[in-house]
Length: 79
Image (cartoon, rainbow, N blue to C red; front, side, top):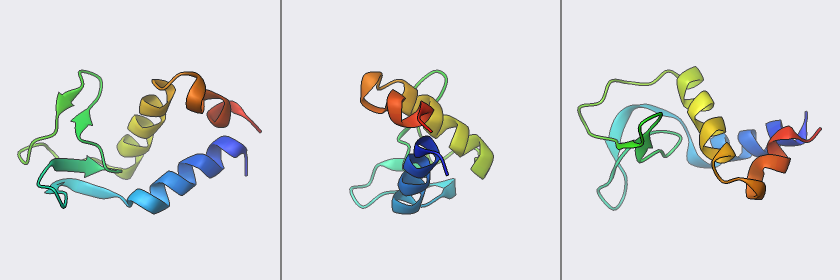
């Protein structure tokens, strides 16, 4: 398993996947792997949002991590 895959697997295991919107412990609408906003427009998650597939959530997670620039980009592209 490549380093990037290990990082994604760790985040997925820690956050857990929820396809339908739910309220987190502090009452924030959340979906997927703990997302509080949706890509590509960075709109806040609402309880009326359509469910995500696990594949859609995994793609969003990769895009979000790319947005952190140098912090995670090496992890996602390393072997």
